[in-house]
Image (tube, rainbow, N blue to C red; front, top):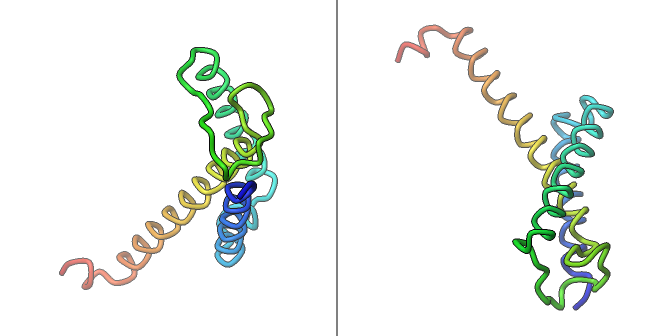
Length: 117
């Protein structure tokens, strides 16, 4: 069924957006920096894809899940959406991990007897 892959990427993006909104990890903490980081990450990976396509390392396989629209040879329409999702997911995961580590440090400093055990 054409479009399922893009729909899955968009649905996953909504899920990450909800996590981000709930804990204010990236876009809700610093919208401009998040947009810049996702844009730069997406552009970097599109260049990476272009090099891979030009050298014959990356080729697009046939899948009934793709829309069938190519932005360039071997570069389906879904690829920039996936790369933006990947960049955003990495940013949210990083911010979440940083927050968890910071909370552990704060908890350990507040309760030295617990840290000694």
